[in-house]
Image (cartoon, rainbow, N blue to C red):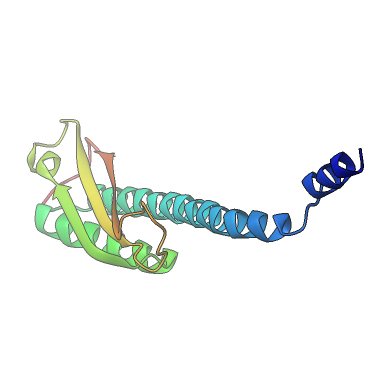
Length: 149
């Protein structure tokens, strides 16, 4: 009987289990936090790129010539990305201003696509790529009755 009590007492001994839980739990928690930061930074970058595309399309649609529309769109997109504090590894701004070349009275839209390669290498989370491409495309209507140059 005495022998059985000693075995039961040793079986219920929890010494060392907190250290094992910590060794397993801390890396899992850090991975979870890293993934939350990745998702947050991606969402903020997507919102900033969408805003840049919107501002660029609007700036291009209110100009009178295709040459000034392209310059206005690129400047507006760059300014918005800078104001939002988004630092892209590479930025690609594509402007379609064909609607400005049609005759007055015709309807059309100016389309702008902004693509930003966001650098995420500072996160150092397993499974998270070093960069993430975020892009948005926005169309803005051209005033059909406005004079064009």
